[in-house]
Length: 269
Image 1 (cartoon, helix red, strand yellow):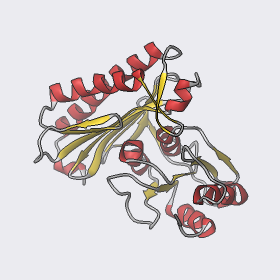
Image 2 (cartoon, rainbow, N blue to C red):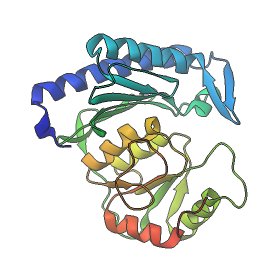
Image 3 (cartoon, helix red, strand yellow):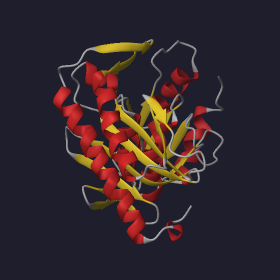
Image 4 (spheres, one colour):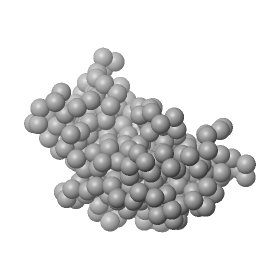
């Protein structure tokens, strides 16, 4: 997918509406921060009225402006047209566990796909007021300023963000990857937000990022941010990331990615 398939005005409109939707979600999250009760969807998997309210705010804006577009959200989907080439993908609150515990590190993640490929992506941290945006062919920005991935070339110099599932067992592949990351790289970070991990890689703050249990809403916006910032993000087979999500590994450049995959070993469930 290239920007040549859409006019500049079309892309500008997509981005403008996405900004409006993300702002509406962020307002809900900020209003309810520190005042929510959580329910468990699964082991250590929380959902709050903030998640639901933020998603509803986005849905209302998207379907008012683009009634025939499809929509996929972490808290449920809403169809537009089964024939639509467009699909909006939303995580209304990435970092819910942080949010529930009063840790101010979470984000809204929204992407627009065209024929299965992201063409617009926004990750917004409402606490720091950092807005990471990308449009296909236009590059990536942070608060309106261009961003690029880091220039790190050696694995031993790489700062790695890791993503672990809610339930971790000693012999899991996630633990193996975490140990290998700690041994072979400069240092590791676990932030609790896959979206911000990917945004930080796009901005050159992290050099490698991986998570083995993500869904489409976790990575859709982050993937276009990284690619437009000059980085690479793939599935574990080294091929382009599946539109449905799943395990991902990303790096500032292909050589760094290959170095990392060489030391963590093959993916095993």
